[in-house]
Image (cartoon, rainbow, N blue to C red; front, side, top):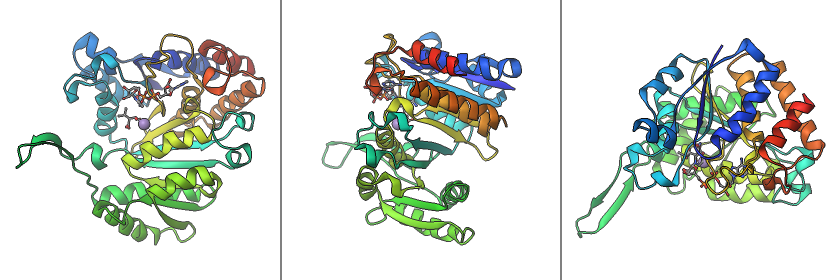
Amino acid sequence: MLIALLPGDGIGPEVIAQARRVLDVVVGDRLTYEEGLVGGAAYKAVGHPLPEATMEIARRADALLFGAVGDPDCDALERRLRPEQAILGLRAGLSLFANLRPAKLFPELADASALRPEVASAIDLVIVRETNGDVYFGEKGIRTNAAGRREGYDIMCYDEDEVSRIARVGFETARARRGKLCSVDKANVLETSQLWRDVVIEVSADYPDVQLSHMYVDNAAMQLVRNPGQFDVIVTGNLFGDILSDQASMCAGSIGMLPSATLDANNKGLYEPIHGSAPDIAGQGKANPLATILSAAMMLRYSLGLPAEADRIEAAVAKALAGGVRSPDLGGTHTTAQLGDAVLAAL
Ligand code: NAD
Ligand code: IPM
Ligand code: MN
């Protein structure tokens, strides 16, 4: 099986290196890797954040393991050349529309959560975030309006087929868990959200066994910190899902702990931590690699048909944490490599 290995920028290569060590121990030469340039690293090397050579590897691969992109040196570039276009281009170009972001507290990390331990310990949810539409991909620009003033715009748009296919992923995910789906929108204000809600209700007819609820996104942000245990599966659009998943990460201890899978209709997937390139800590050995290691486990489970190996990695992460290893984001002083060492020792 071929893995497209896409380290990217900042802490991306640092966390990918640890995930690679873990994969080498757990699956060894059952996987082969082809490395591709993405993000600012790709722009600096060949003038584009998502070179065709990388897309070619990505298309051929059985799964993609992605670090992070983003480079302050590139923030002034025209948008199509910015590092972030790499992840957006992969999601769009490979029709990776279903972004699964599980947030669960490892019991050993109750003290790292921003919430009181008794509130935090209840968190065990999956955010199912749509990643091919919404304001991300609508018409956008900066124009001069009739009053001669500059005006920025990003059109928010979802068609009913985009909503129904992500709704089905939400219902299926809920069905395989505790059977509760909460659809998060802003239907009290946005027409896009009204269509979203109507279509989710239509799709629910096929899932009478799943308990469906609806929540406005502002309330959802509040409920996530008030009582995260009330959620099983959240299904939502691209922008709301982006924001809520960073928030959920801190309920579960750290942004350095949350993995993700972004799947197409055939379970080909891109696997990445939910965090970015963290320029503030890059190159210092401070990055927590566990989100990326857990993303590698998701890759084995969802795209490569190796669930026992995925379980083994997740158990090793739990054991490493139980042994007391902690990067700075978790309140400790261990380095990126020491976290990798602890997971390998647990394996
Ligand atoms: P970020 O997620 O990179 O960092 C936010 C904060 O969390 C920083 O203080 C950082 O040090 C910390 N952090 C993040 N990951 C960590 C880890 N593994 N261990 C310990 N601490 C960690 O978000 P940002 O600072 O808003 O963005 C930085 C760059 O990353 C930007 O260019 C942004 O566009 C990009 N970005 C990329 C992705 C992606 O590649 N999928 C995701 C988010 C942001
Ligand atoms: C994420 C990131 C990306 C997003 C950015 C870098 C384009 O924040 O993967 O969560 O907004 O989807
Ligand atoms: Mn994000």
